[in-house]
Amino acid sequence: MSRPRRSEHTREALIEAGIEQLSLYGYHGTGIKQILDAVQVPKGSFYNFFASKEAFVAELIQSYSQNMFEQVDAFMEGEGKTLNPRQQLESIMHYSLHKFAKSQCQKACLIGSMGAEVAAESEACRVELDKSMVKYMAFLASIFANAQQLGQVGNALSPEQMANMYWATWEGALIKMKMQSDVQPVKDIMHSLLETLFKA
Image 1 (cartoon, rainbow, N blue to C red):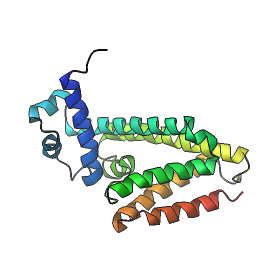
Image 2 (cartoon, one colour):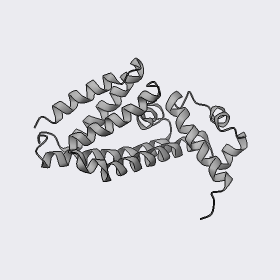
Image 3 (spheres, rainbow, N blue to C red):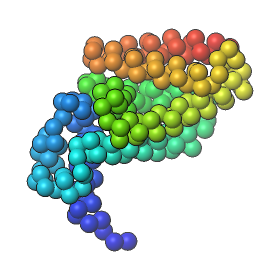
Image 4 (tube, one colour):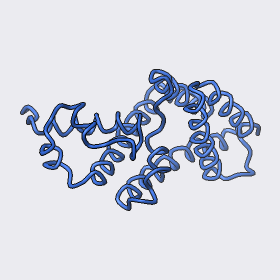
């Protein structure tokens, strides 16, 4: 197998640094210079790969989403196979919160953060955010559909409605997490929601 070219390494490094910086400082709080300084490459290198900051962020969203779904798929094909739907959701939640805690709660879900900040400003970013949202909603809905089949949740709401409720609550709880620098409020809020949804 041939080694990746240096230019490919530079491109990957820019994407990784971009996700890191945007996760911490947001779209408007992150400048291209910050990312270039983190990777230690000249400005020209950035524009060899990306036409603009907007195009760059759209690709970051795509890369972040792809990585997230790869982790989710690996979990569902591995440990998740042995868990019931509620346990699957709880396991994913605790894994995510562990990662957020490692950053002192300064990072949260990039999709939610960029959705709030740039979806109305950038069509390219909005399209990538929507793709990620549609896929994640389908994933959550499949868990709730399985829970209904097992009699773990009631039928008053459709799996899609429960998925939307779960995601909206999760993103709102993450805002509170960042405000209080504490993952405990998220645990409390999400456990209360699960208790409600899984009350068949």
